[in-house]
Image (cartoon, rainbow, N blue to C red; front, side):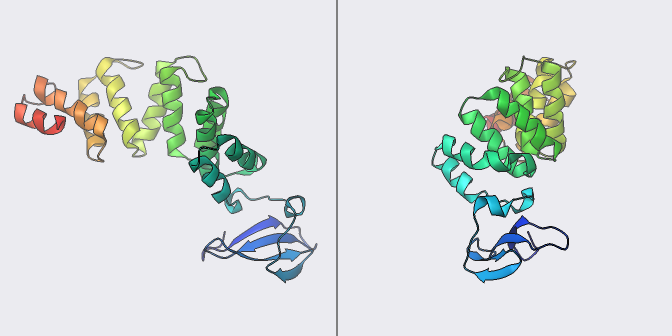
Length: 219
């Protein structure tokens, strides 16, 4: 993908004719290079495209199928490119597997997406180990992945990490850390965090007891 938004999808070989499809920044077809020759408004067979760049794969068709809850179709569209895909594309595959309740495969691809820096994938890994979906329950592993998501600014990761600190699950109980991460999640509008924060003020945990403040967060 070029900085101006143009997408070039295809196979490039040094000193050899190349094949690729070119799209305008708005996603509409521009044309194709076929054995090195430009052809406006032409497209290529999938076999000749030979997609090699995850960055250049257009996921719009797969995203549309996902949005329409046709998860089998989304999976069909995503799998041919998954190995070379970027973290966002792999995350879409993860979410597709989750909707199909194929949790082990979801965890496998979440690891791959997270390895490319996808923060939502880290949250999904935390939830997988927390609730035992696709893997055995492992609270320490859940803390690990929630922390990665939380430190990257993911509000749900922050809330979940705070919850585990509050209850001493997978980590030594620490009300100060629990409050810290819960409060961070609330500042991003996380409703679970906002409700949980109310209990700290209601019960006077870490902070001075304040029923008015508690009422504010409960509401």
